[in-house]
Image (cartoon, rainbow, N blue to C red; front, top):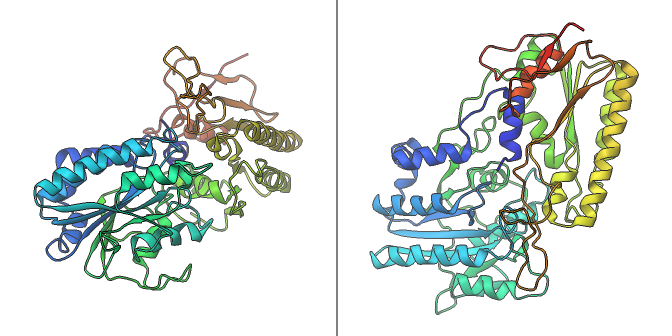
Length: 482
C-alpha cells in the first residue's frame, strides 16, 4: 500500500528509493541495525536502565509493523536489554477498527516468553494513535502531551493491571474507536505505574514513518521546549527507528540510516531558472515541500521559490468540515498562476485522503466535491494564461470506502453491517495532462505499462522544456508528428 510520504518522494525525485519499512526490514534481517551507532548509543543504558519502545501497534505497514517490533524485542533482549517497557498506540486507521485487541494479545504473548527467560518485559502504557502521541505538523500538541503524561510521567485517566483488559474495557465505551482510545497506564498491585520513563533510561520510537513521530521526537530530544509543560525532562538516550527530519537532524540518533535522496526535480528546475510556488494546508504542506524535495526542509533558492501553508482545522476530525481548505488552496494557486511570477505552481488538495480516513461516506462525498471545485478553479486559471496542467494523486483512498473479499464483494461485520475501509487503497492513480500550452503532438507513450509516480518528475521536466537526468524513471510523454 502506498503512503503519502513515499509517494511525494517519488513524484519529486523521479526515482524509487528503498524507504522506511524496506530499510528497516533489511537492517533487521541482516542484523546491521545492531552494529550501527544508534543501537550502540542506546545500549549503554541497558545495564542499569530500562529500554522503552514507543510506537503504533499494528501490521498496517504505513507507520510501523508488528513483526518489526517483535524482531526488535528479540534482538535487544539477546543483546543485553534486561528491562523493557512497550508504550503501545492502537491503530484502527490503517487496519480494521477493533483489531487492536488481537495485536495486543500477540505482543503480550511475546513479552510473556521474554519474562520466562528472566527479562522484565511488559506493556507500560497505551492509547489511540489520533488522540495519544501521533499528531503531525504541530496540529495539536495536546495529543503529544497526553502521550507524554502516560509514557514519561506515568499519569493517565485510566489505570489497568493488564493491557488487553485495558483495550477491551475502553473499547466497550459508547462510540469507542481504536484511533481515539483514551490514554491508559499499566500499574502494579500497589497501583504504581510499571514503566514511566526516568533518568538513565533508553527510548526508541519504533515507527518508520516520520510525520507522526516528529513532534514526540522534539519533546524527547529538545532541552528548550515550550509546546507544553513536560513537568520533567528525563536524561535519556533517545533514538528513532529512523531519522525523522533530515534538515532538523531529528532525532540526532537513529537505528537505521535514511536513503540519500539528492538531485530532485525541484532542485534541478530551481537551478535552471524555473520559478516555483508550492501550497497546501498544514496536513499536506510538508508533502509538496519537504517530501517533494527529498526529505529536505526549506528552499533551494528563496528568490526562486515561494511556499505557502494554510493552517488546517485543528481540534476536530476532518469529516466535521470536509471541505477543509480546498477553496483557499485553489485561490492561492489561482492567484499565483495569474500573477505571472511563477513557471510552476504545485498544490496538494488533501480532502479525498484526510476525510476518506474517517470512513464517513457522506462527508467524503462533500470532500470530493470540494476538491473538484478547487481543481476547476485552478484549471480555469491555467486556461487563462495558456498554461499546462498535470493532475494526479499519490495514492487512492476515497474511491473505495468498504472492505471487500477476493471477489470484490463488500465484507460484513458480525452485526451484518458493511465494514468501512479507512485506509489507502491499492488502486493505480489516474494522471491527466492538458491545457492550451501543451505542444501539438504531445501524447502518452504506450510502452510503459508499469509506469508510476516516479515517472511524473521526468514528465514535468519535459513539459518545462528540459531533458530529465538519465537515471530518472522515463517520461510518460512523447511528441509525434501530426
